[in-house]
Length: 116
Image (cartoon, rainbow, N blue to C red):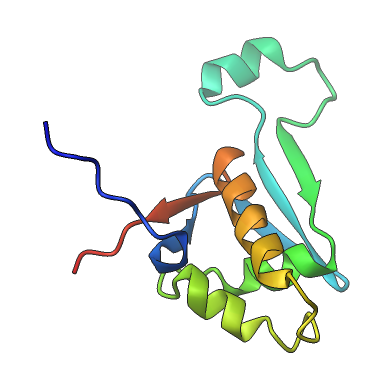
């Protein structure tokens, strides 16, 4: 059995998930996504008057990261572009990496391994 190749997180390309919509609210972005995966579940499981979507308001740093996710830039490029935003704060690189990993776990983005 071949050893699994180690993937460098800095080389992967974050892509926004198709089912997420983003709207600007002032200085920040609010992400919206369906409460349930299938439309029939929405119809039967969401109480009347309740939104069929869940909303997540990103704070300032999250908004800055989200705006750089374009499906072309890899994590390293996003981190480099955020240096000024974070005023080169110590350890911001690992914060951005952890944030992107969490966004992937929550289904907001997909991390795509570039084909070389």
